[in-house]
Length: 119
Image (cartoon, rainbow, N blue to C red; front, top):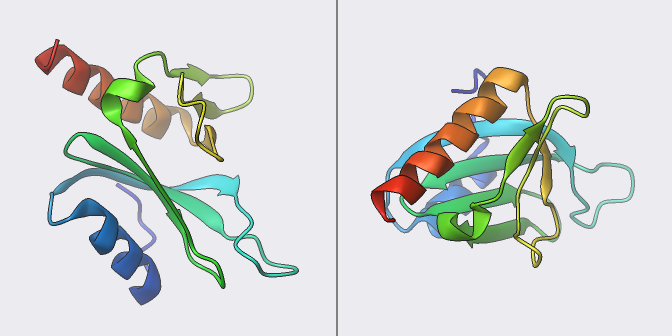
């Protein structure tokens, strides 16, 4: 898990998106997203809660997207770029999540585990 705690605003976004489902994975990525601030693009958080991946960041126009795990079945870790590539996930704004290798592999293992239990 991530050593950096969520801010109050980030925690509120996560709580609203997870609908009371426990979080199995939470990590602050190196990926930055536009949330309507001129010179500040905050880093994106990724969470796995139940059968949903939740991507979120706070700002003037906070960013929250959810993706059913079954729609991330072809995801992989690109060791050269240091990113988890969520696939197929064509509708997501942020499909490449910059994560350290251990966190990236852990997230992929959890996604694959969810898929195997529902196959």
